[in-house]
Image (cartoon, rainbow over all chains, first blue to last red; front, side):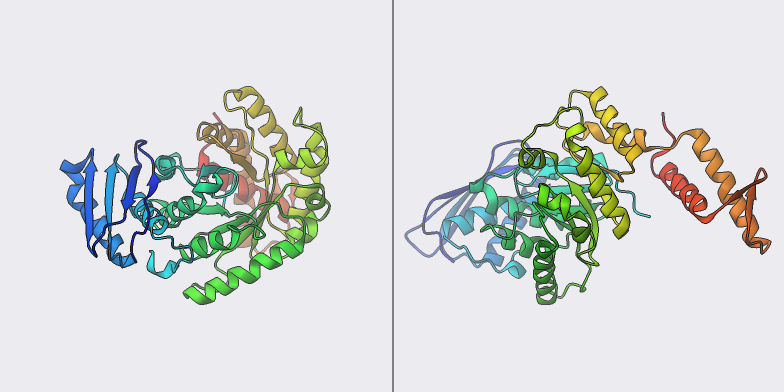
Length: 98
Length: 290
């Protein structure tokens, strides 16, 4: 899966996160994470984001995340929504999204 | 007996509310993918609800999802997501006939087989929002073994009836029809939302009415209404005291091998004993009325 267009998902409200994805010219994935709770939960956030990208099989794209203290379930959902929008995927395999 | 006094609506696209609503402890929590979600957020809301349903904080609460109607581009995708995520109950909006439930049931069963979920474990409820739905309430209520309840949805219903929300007169027939259908089918009945969250007096007046009619509970749009509703549905100390004596008398009659139960010289039959047991369950769940 590759990001083919810019896309957004989420909000900057408390307990949510905003995820922006952009295409990259090469087959590589860049992830930038900013979080209000990076000091306490940075490792866990990176782990959830990494797992989510692996599940989707993302090969190319830049992911910029601004977290406002979201739960893991919201992080998974927002990252998936932004990537699926940016990759123009409409038919989902739900068994690979849990 | 599962108490379903309060069914709290949560907009499916709101991450903050989905992350915190479990603390309010309604009897059932209902993630809304339909009217509360704009068209451009349908995909993101579906993913949020899919993951929220699998979050451990919701494992001890009964979860309901209001999907979009199956005749929209979103309904079937909603169903795929929530059945796979383990939702307890799917709420079908705008149910006009038993055929609507049969169509839903066919799809639910297909998804349960595909994902390995136990067949029949996804329960259903129908929201009745039109004159057709009210007229067909009984066949809707009896349309599937998966049905746990039917709910009246007031806004669309009064629009269909060419009237508007008022003192409740406009809902009188629909409330009675839905309630009778639920009782014949042996399932639960839920009343409409009360949208003015700042009008506690009006809310409690409506709760008193629907409680007297016999509704199991009410759809809610604000967590502040939960405690008010639970307290209004809680039995009084006198109710609890009488119920304890009825149940004790029934247990004694059973121990003594007596077919007839008597309390203070009056005969008590099975419906009274069952009612007393429900009173004690309600008291255990919510305490006595304050």
